[in-house]
Image (cartoon, rainbow, N blue to C red):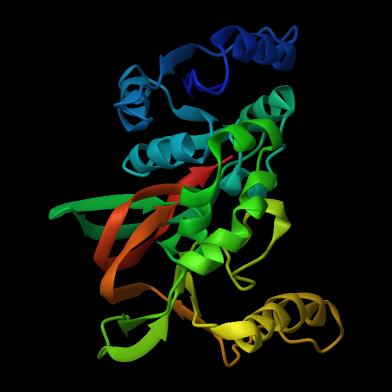
Length: 314
């Protein structure tokens, strides 16, 4: 028997008619048709409240139909209910969690079919606490969060270009993002230990490791291992960036595909890889913070932690 389904959909990404057509195509002539509750997101509620409404109506499977922001907001709410499962109908630009979990992109009927037929798999959820404009915030992230090049690529990306060419627009902004990413002093404390001093222009904490274009930033990241993976970059000048590229493309890329190529991520002069359950970061000056593709504002104090097995995802 199919569970009661809640479909939380972002009207800026699709229409209910298109979603209904895809769902009907998936269900076909099935006699045991599920009850469906439809809840639309709004600018003020990107998904958490909508997911809450669907769960309150009896949904035990919530499908997030939208981009990464919608998925993240719905995941926050679903993580609070042990008897509710999550599925994704990816409709955004990055679709980061969907890509990391192998959910079909640009194929709504196939995405719905997996949501209705696959067993749920537990995955972790990351949480970040920060102060933005003097106000404390706490957000979940299913993929990655942090500051530096990733956040600057988002803020530097032209929205009109993104609407035309999708994730390739981020590549166009890469040069400006590199220029905006200045090295600053940071203090990092891992798993409650004593803080250590470092320098960085980019720090990413991830539950998953792959971003737009299939680029893997965190090669050891496993969304169900109960840990978060950390990447710290402090490259400066041509030599530093060449070292970073070699580390990503060879040491933690092609080399790992060869026999004896190593099972753990390698660090280098400009890159540092860590695995933690909790991380506190003090920045020498505020930086824009990115969470699963959304920039939430500038902050100088960040606290990360993992919630193991928080989500059951189909």
